[in-house]
Length: 335
Image (cartoon, rainbow, N blue to C red):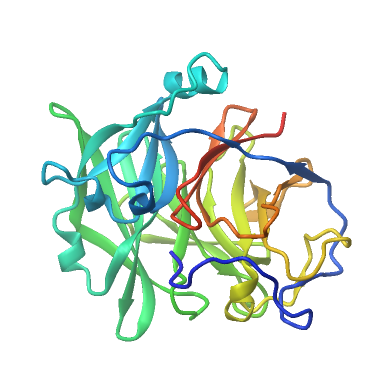
């Protein structure tokens, strides 16, 4: 989540985070998004999605505030069957998709967690679920990791409100906590939102077992700007994270040089891209076998705050914004 509003315009050329660095040249691919129509039961601007993940053949959209989807008094998570997405993307049925609502019972966590400011990440492991919460406690932004499970008859997702793990903000920057997560071998991994050299000297991914007991860390590459979500891992240990930059927050994210940028990128422009990573021998590294995927920016340079990311077969990714500049659900094809 961002407190500041996204807007168009450019930062001054001497602002941090506006120029290409001296990193190793990498394969870049520029791709336009294909928007997918959503027919939500609430006003689009209220949805404020913050994460995506697959539960079996259902894509689950995580709202920052699930109570938004509570017409009958019960919070819910919107879900979309894979078959419905297939029919949309194939052109067979391109009417706006009406998600199915799965009740979400969080045991009153919004009242029980001090400084609760909504959910930021979701990761499924079969019928087990892990979520991160952003909160402000004692003037410090902190994440809370919780676990949940899918229950049946009736179908619902139930949070274990008694089992939770506090995770102090690695960057110590306001409003930046554990923004991405994925599961490996039944253990959940979380990634802090800021991993640039100036704000997070030794970026790591945090590992926890199914009871949320810490298991140590995996080193992370220094990725400037924000990391807002991660996909699940494929069979080769590869996954993708969304990496973005809005020039208006250049100073707070502490970036000055962008090692991944092409040298011809004009200063002061937003960054919206997907970075390929791989888990190798207990550390997370950049995957040189896959390109950095740069999204085609809006012509007015109004930044889109992409908060959710999920793999779509081997063809590309599904992405979703929160509410800046509006709710956008889209497909990014790279094959």
